[in-house]
Every structure is written in structure tokens, then in C-alpha cells.
Length: 119
Image (tube, rainbow, N blue to C red; front, side, top):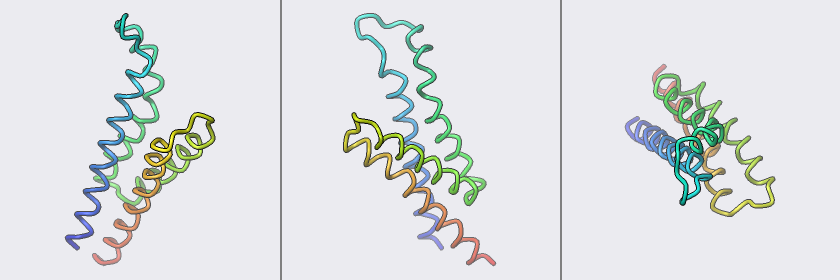
């Protein structure tokens, strides 16, 4: 039971850090180094919405693990589809996108196993 809890926490911390890093990268990706102002940040804020969603789903997984694991897996599958369908898809982007649904499935497995063992 302790191992399942540790795997669950590692998966949640991984998704939190991935969503924060992706949020930060999406926010600053369009900033011109020579002209940094708040307007560019506001214009680029729309690119961060999916990563705010992943962050919210990961936070939700601390209370409602099975539901949020389903949603994280679905989010990861959609992200993987969009990241691999582009012509500019870099291998690291594909790899990181593939870890989202995989981590969602691991969280789902941990939630189902915890549910079975506690009953």
C-alpha cells in the first residue's frame, strides 16, 4: 500500500512540475528579448490555458484520483495527437507529451488498486 501511495505522489509531482514548466515556457515563448513589456505577456496568455488545465486536473487528483486520472489521460491523448500531427514536432516534445497519458494511466491504476484494497 505504501508503494502505491509513493507511485501516486511521484506521478502527481511529475505532472505538477511538467505543467508549471510548460506554462512558463508557453508564457515567455513569444517575448522579444530586446523589448520586454507586459503587453506581450498578456497577448501570449492564451497559450498557457491548456497547461493551467493540466495543473488544475493534477491538483484535483489529490482529492478525486480516479476521475482526474481519466481526465488527465484524455488530456494527454489529445495533447499527444496535436503535438505529433504538427510538422515541427521535436522528439523531446513528443516524448514529454507521451508521458502525460502514461502518467494518467498509472494514476488510474493506483486509484483503482487503492479502491480494491481498501474494500
